[in-house]
Length: 261
Image 1 (tube, rainbow, N blue to C red):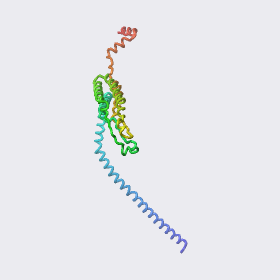
Image 2 (image 1 turned 180 degrees about the horizontal axis):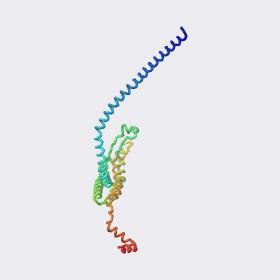
Image 3 (image 1 turned 90 degrees about the vertical axis):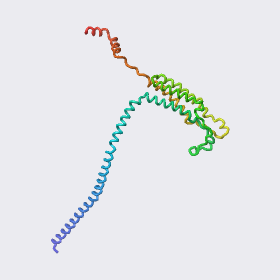
Image 4 (image 1 turned 135 degrees about the vertical axis):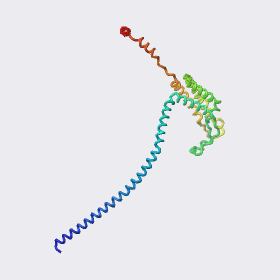
């Protein structure tokens, strides 16, 4: 075969290989495009349906959200109008007096025996309690009349006599004195149990602390009540103010004004 014929044959083979490579590349690109297009199409369909579902749910609950927002705004406006500092302070003071009365039926202290044998096991098996004392029994239920007196003083101060609120101070002092001077020594007194048992301990319970805190809070609230319930000073009438201003004008100014008239 001549060299020219060989070159032509080689060119034909190269052209055929190139065309095959182009077709193969195009087919590969098409396959890759399909591999990308199919997941994207599936994702878009799912996203479209989910978006429609979310939109339907949102349109369904949107009126309720608007109504709740309006109701919250009305409640806030009512609270701003009704929950004045004076009313809130009176409510807290009444709750404190009720807590003082309720503490009289609570346990003052508990005496436990054999505490040395239960060290490290208090959370699982606490030592047995042999004696429990009540707050009211310790001081002959004097906390009840003190609580009633506190309620009457609070109501009286809220009904236009703020000076009565200061009388809560001696009531609170009496509660603190009873708690510290009578209830605490009585609650920590082990009595005959210390002789009959080994390793006896006495612990003050919630009743004691509730009564003591109630007395302290009443003392603090007495000052606050007397301040927030104090009647506001009203301004003087306009005539009195004008008279006062006229009284303190310089003489020359008054003469000039009269001459102008």
